[in-house]
Image (cartoon, rainbow, N blue to C red; front, side, top):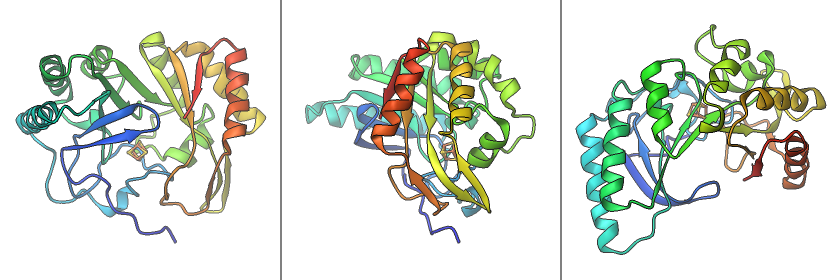
Length: 261
Ligand code: SF4
């Protein structure tokens, strides 16, 4: 049985938290405060499975995102708190918010006013990058971090559970390649079992498929990471850091800048 999970973020703006990938990060959650909405249903999702429901609070209006962020940044500035990055993550997929492009413009303007040196990052599962308005918005941020957990369809489906059957590696890789070095690819490496299927996206076949996908995409860099907290599928294990580093070396040998978080 999957273990109980609670939604991690109970507000639109949360933190700042120290992120192992991004530094001191203030989070923006464009999803409900009390539920999860995502076009994936990853077996490792720290927010739990989609089955927990969408909650009752709905998506935060554009004006609330702007005013919550402004107030938080004013308070942080008064306290002279450091800030490296404003990160869109939260209880699901941020690009599903219908005002995502407008919100990106607002957040850039607010960042420029209060913390001009802070970066803006979006953690996205890549399901909405073929929408031109979403793609254009993602091109405006400093760190456009897009998910690719496996370049083999069966494995990607087992790990990420995309809601749309049209979401396939064949469609995804050219869409990611259109961003080229205007994106960072993030890959979660893990091993375990899920519904009686063995999952391991670190096998030689998986890594070779990932390397040829990265080579087609030519991202600014690849971020490799593994499980760090409890996951809704209990039968998963983290990949040791030494192994992540050895996989990273193989990717780097193919000419792709790679970091391990
Ligand atoms: S894409 Fe992100 S938010 Fe959505 S299920 Fe996967 S890990 Fe969770």
